[in-house]
Length: 173
Image 1 (cartoon, rainbow, N blue to C red):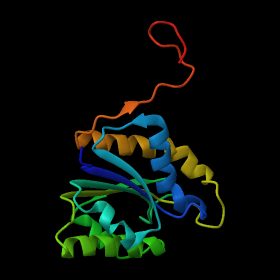
Image 2 (image 1 turned 90 degrees about the vertical axis):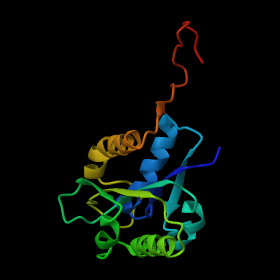
Image 3 (image 1 turned 135 degrees about the vertical axis):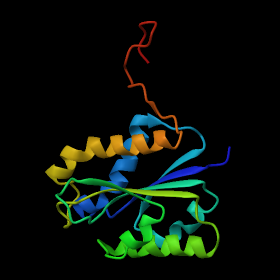
């Protein structure tokens, strides 16, 4: 089955909250089973290198740390026509790549019909691997926002059964 939807986590995991998009997509992969036409991808800071990965998709959902000039931990959804103007002020170097990516896909006529960016206002963008306490506290809300957007798009996501949990017949997996 052809992949119709891609969920792409963006960011640099070496800069604390800047990597929240990558962490979110990886956590989604651990917790949920997705239909075969949905692809989860760690987009890191790839920028234009993502172009072949979004071509032919119907919908793209980016997840990232974004500077929306709000309190750290605030979550926003920016969609379709709002994206180009939103990406003008840059939070980090990979946003240059995202705006270029969207421009290139439009220019080539391969831009997906629907594009959404779910972002969270970072608290700490500095060298380190751990997300800030504020982002950790809002991480579940970020995941729920992603699930809600997918549900709006008609994507059925199922929670994975935890290993060692009893099944309906009382046996462990």
